[in-house]
Image (cartoon, rainbow, N blue to C red; front, side, top):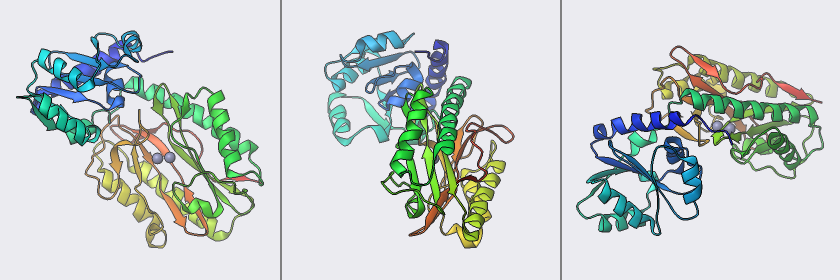
Length: 362
Ligand code: ZN
Ligand code: ZN
């Protein structure tokens, strides 16, 4: 399996190691497996990483020792029998006294047990600092995200060509997923959404046995994973002739999507991008737009930053974010149009590539 070049990981580690003292701690304990993969290249599903300005250690259990030693370069791998005992020993060796941790990835029970084990060590939650750890993507990440998006686009174009009225939503999802796997996807990045007709009014509908028919919108929200990196994109297809209301609504969502993308650039407030999408939809439509405008994407399909009314995030170059306005009319239909872009100093660059002009399937 091809990996990002190994020096990518050591560069990421040294960037983080430089920040540790600025965060008011002398080491950090990471349990978020995506953060661990980001800093070490380890692709297992469980482990712990301790980092200080002087050094980094990866701790794994016996299932992963051989794998970690093969995948990780430049940092020692330690095997533990009991994970908290492993932390205790590593923290003592590294002489850590103030350890920052990810509050979203430390449960209350582990926290209590660690406090009892680590006498004379302070545990400090670093929620905001570590939430943003992977938000700005480096060049190696953008390459992988574009590859994931290209595989996804080929699969979705294949679906758009094959799909006919009479298919069930599940058949359409299966077809898309087959195409994605055959095209090189490791797996889907999340459960594919194919929501037709009235099911489209549920933003996170699960594919059902409903047969797709004339007059439907079909919302297809899909993503693939390639070397750990996710794509995220939504197409809404038209089946046969639509009503004038449906066509107008699609145009309104497309306009909101286009305007929001046009406003993205380094320094833009995420909440302002969200507000612009709502303003562009206008009074008539915006109350049917029931979720945030977008989110970061990377090793996880939902990660920092957040493009939503309450977000305090400011966009920075290298952040990969979605823009996904939608309208949801309960009992009738739904529309969502989603692309992923990478923020640039002035503007942004598309990562996803399917056209969002309305595609009609006869
Ligand atoms: Zn999506
Ligand atoms: Zn999304």
